[in-house]
Image (cartoon, rainbow, N blue to C red; front, side):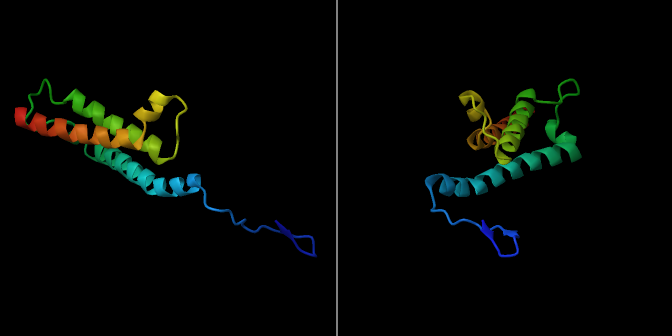
Length: 120
């Protein structure tokens, strides 16, 4: 902080040496952005076109593959939590809502969707 003669306060940024924490947070900002984009895409597509959650050619009594929807919503939740920068304290929650969990759930959802297409 720098003060001038007319008693106004001018804030100046302090120059800090780069630490591992600041470097890792800068590297994770793109990763968090990817997680947030994945989550927002799932949210918007699911809201705009809810038939995305149903299976093509499925019988009327079972149009939804609940395992597929569950892992897709897990990917959305993990992407939102990780994307906004929240880090849970409890280790199982931290893994469940990490960026890796988001990608894993998204891959598992894609796998279940392709398997459901083969079965249907």
